[in-house]
Image (cartoon, rainbow, N blue to C red):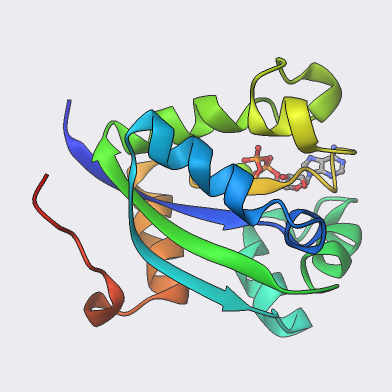
Length: 143
Ligand code: ATP
Ligand code: MG
């Protein structure tokens, strides 16, 4: 296994409900290190660009509307196998199918309002991290 970096987003509904700390605690208790963090209120253009891979899907307008309704927290998580470990912590995309104990299983309201985003592969992680952060924003540290 390799040390990986992955992009996490705490989505608008979760920020609005004061769940930032509870969600970050899950990452830290899993042993993932937060090496960058930023709060940002996405513009429609930014949200469209971030989720451009889904632009032909019927849920795209609703997804963009949700992601722009209030601020998000963007995080870079670092650790062994961080991409899959973060996806495991998140749970299934549809919260009705997410296991209890996962972030979406415990906090999400619907498939659109599903609390968190996580990169799904090394290539998308690199692109998504660069969407929010420059190299100088990343603060890795020795364990
Ligand atoms: P994310 O990319 O946000 O981490 P994911 O990788 O689990 O989620 P994707 O298939 O990449 O899921 O979908 C991106 C987002 O689009 C989902 O998080 C969800 O909010 C929304 N979405 C996906 N599928 C649907 C659907 N069938 N109906 C409504 N919204 C959907
Ligand atoms: Mg995805």
